[in-house]
Image 1 (cartoon, one colour):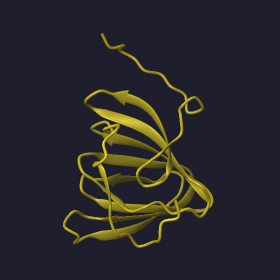
Image 2 (tube, helix red, strand yellow):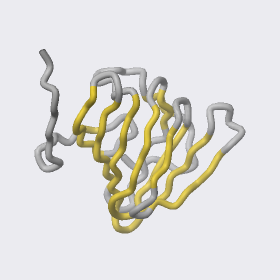
Image 3 (cartoon, one colour):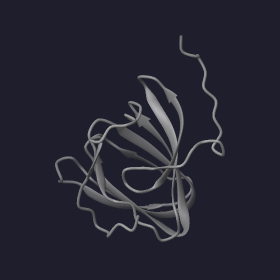
Image 4 (cartoon, helix red, strand yellow):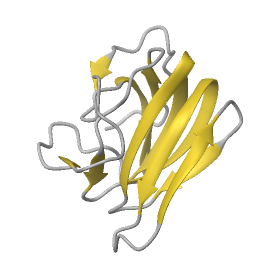
Length: 135
């Protein structure tokens, strides 16, 4: 039987490399519904551009700043948005995206729906983005 509750702290969560190269601390998971994580990039770092195959995300910037580039599945819509504390954005399934940190680094929390498929080698596929990745 699965425990009905999960409680984790950011400090106790392991740091792993996300497919885009950012540092991620996986946190709580609601099986079948979603997962929650903390992402960070050091000052001046640029993540690799990727597209997700099955998951969509909602991001919320908690510290630092930077930029987020997104391109729609069809490629007909593209945007670049400033990231700063308090900004919330979506990454629908099939959206190509890339992000970079400003001078103060970047920290984001995100919900992934459905939960991130741990161990999948095909969930995040590299794509062309506007910036050269540095991680």
